[in-house]
Image 1: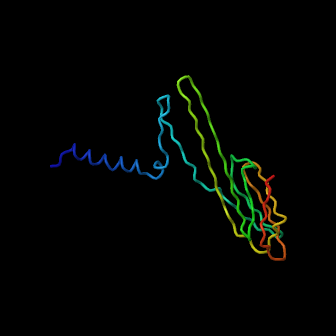
Image 2: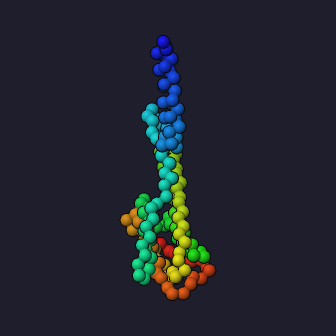
Image 3: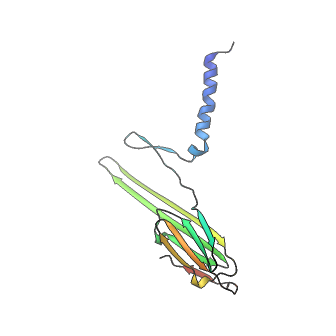
Length: 154
């Protein structure tokens, strides 16, 4: 007959290991704050969703990126490759009588799309509104040039 106390000790170990190495919790460390409470830091490593719509005269690209500002985006075309990137830095300072807490975070992403040869670089427009970056890429008859074009987000 097996000892019940040894069985419970053995069954507890896989539970601790699976909780520690669970992929959802592994990248969300627990930090002790000064009030004695635990809080989670979540690392957001997601890449924004991208929709591409082809119409008769142009292509439309919609990129869902809520919480950003138009100044955070960089959009450029180089040798037929459209690259959309964004960087955002946030800082939070809190000073109390017996401690000072400073937090900052930095997030960025980059998405690239190979454009068809019949796109007009010079007429690409970009607008950021209500958390969505909208690009309009007109079509043309001739092939792309090999130059670089930076698109301003309005």
